[in-house]
Image (tube, rainbow, N blue to C red):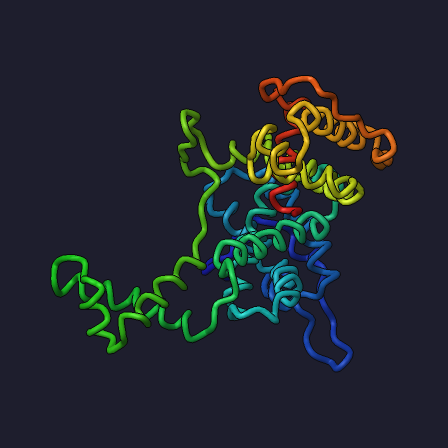
Length: 331
């Protein structure tokens, strides 16, 4: 990236820091050879060049020269950040290239007047650019290398056959071209689904509320609250008397009516209604106070001889819906 020409009026090179060597080698001029500059020289010269850059007009030859010199002076930051990712499957040169994009973004946004050292400002931007690269190009799930290679072969074969045939090839034509079975072809197609990225700016349709995926991320998800309720209900259900758990399971798990529950347990529908009402109220109280349900066996309501009434509506509203889900999985 070293520019072909150097302008003499960019800065006073006589005052430029020079790197000296103890073994007698000639000192390095950071402006002439920025890639060989020491870390200390690169930092001090970067401050001078950033101040100079702020006075230049973007698009001019001098502006490009100063900016390119800043990039070369600070490439060591990219290599430093890239070494943190050397254990990944991507080639190191690709990681450095992506990190250089982050360095350029940092140079474009850096404001020398704020007094923040460029190293501290640039490293998070460089690292973030590399992480974004891995996020956007990595497999969503771990896929064996054999399937990764099969996916690539399928993509190449599809392009080649499309150019020859003037249309998209069929599955059978792809399998015959690659010499694989239909099952292997299906396996390769399935593996390709694990390698996909979706932009947050892509327009999505959710019922009658169109918008981007990024907007959808900020919406409240009612299911999260229901999951919390279910998890909170589990220990409360475990502490209930056996018959109360059975009634809940019959009512909300098997969706039996109160009359059907009464027939199965040998009690009246009215008694089932009272037991159900008391149990749900106790569960609701336990959710609100974090207190365990009281021992209800001693105060169990007695069965009265009044005629069975129509099934009473279940109390507690949303609490009952939570019990419906909890009992379905609990028992």
